[in-house]
Image (cartoon, helix red, strand yellow):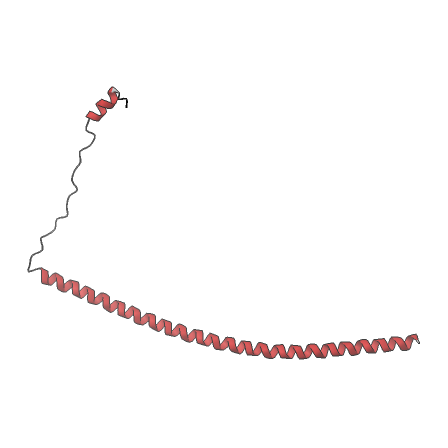
Length: 118
């Protein structure tokens, strides 16, 4: 590695001074303070558990409502399927009648054409 006089001079300079990050001033926890802190922590935990219980209860209510809605939708779909089945039967009957009338019309026209040509 080649070193130049400028590099040697620059490395000899101090470019910055490292300053320690100040630590947060914290009061030492006294033994008399410990039960109070524990009570506050337990009260916070109880509040969090109560909120979680309420959230789970609300979630279960929502699931029950969703279940009812899906059941209602399933009933509607079954009724719709039944109605479509009835409609399909009616369309099949009408189609058969239309084909019968078409055949009758063709026979009638053919008979009329034969009489006119004879």
